[in-house]
Image (tube, rainbow, N blue to C red):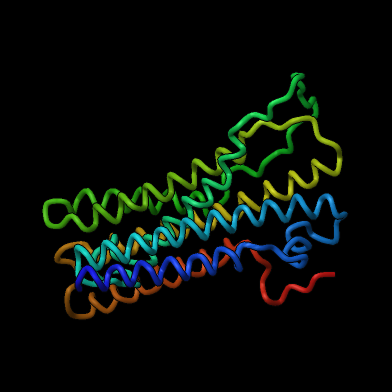
Length: 272
């Protein structure tokens, strides 16, 4: 594919991104009610709305940059752009790179929590922080899958570098998700009113749940890619059918988990 066509692809992608960025990043009153758990006063609704808008913009920007990266790398270096586990190189796969960009966008949306709130007076809340439920099951599974992918990728290095690239991509994505979770859990909290604590708690809980799904989605996707590219394994016969089924299941699971991490309510949700 020539450089002229590559320029056209990038231009069209940027136009689509601008349209989605302007239209798709705005929260609605229905979105706010869903996140808040019910109708809330206007000032609280504004806080929820700003949070959703920021996350959508950052996630959308990260996802589109990831997809653009996959398109450019796939066309320029691998001659094709793919979507699906095991098809070509992972850096030329729009789902793999798009998910990585989404997680990176979620991290950038949460980095404001790392900056301390500046005030002429030093204040602190003496109220105990709410107890967290510990590490959730999706996070534990994501860590285990990532570790398994790293082991498989390292063992496959003498024959092929593709499994190692997939495993490394999983480590990066899961690491970004872990860093975002740490930022959400450990961020400093100023003195808050009772209602502000409720808002803070709901936003924190939403962020942790969404990040857990993103982290598990990344681990499943990277694990599927690593398994699909193990050299000399299940290239023919019944074992190849099993391998294809496993990689397809990993792809479907990654998409479902990515969908669960959305910043909008499900279609069946009815705002009271």
